[in-house]
Length: 325
Image (cartoon, rainbow, N blue to C red):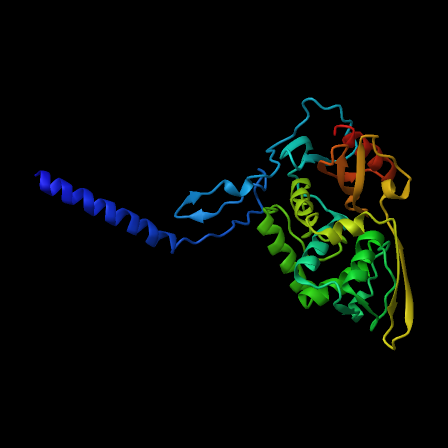
């Protein structure tokens, strides 16, 4: 009997590790893309034989609901807002951060992320006839069919002036078409855990199937700020360059930031430096703003407001939010 027990133990020691190693080679992971969840989009599930892996959220700020305690923020006019301490992985303030809303041109931080990941800054983009956007109030650089510029130049026009026609140039160059690029945007967002969002265009002009959340914008911004070029662009007040028309003639590219903090029209608290960010405004989205800022110790923060009533109130509320840093 002792001999049999000994043999059994030996077989167990051999077989169990072998089974575990075999199993490691057959795991399949897939991100669930649930548009109907009311809980936070950080809970991306990786399916492995019915088990849920929670490690995805490590290092991320997490909040399942509103966070007000310990703050003195007046956010009565904006529909949703959030302030995230990047290094501390904590949510300082949260109001409706998982509510699906129209993002307007804050969309363009995802457009920039896809462009920086899949393109090269010296790529030459050529404008198609699709750059002629007719929506009333849409911000345009004024490019014409056949105009060419580098991706580097296009990103300045995209992020500073918020040029919607240039967004089309970027999308068609990187994704082959607006539809193809939108698929890339959704795949990128999904991979970051921004699963309560859906994007159908690269510029954020109004569409019922184009939406995101405060929390998802935090996740996207948290990724794109890893690119030095993005930081360089959003921290610029102005940019001047030369691009070309279809015949090779020079055209002036001169753009200025829409960010009131960088323009000197709004002032952050003394202990906060606004590095930059992205504005967004449409009748459907209201006034929107996402910022990347740092405190006196150089610690980074991401703050987002969606659907404030107007530009003046937007910056008052954002300054109030930054006071919590």
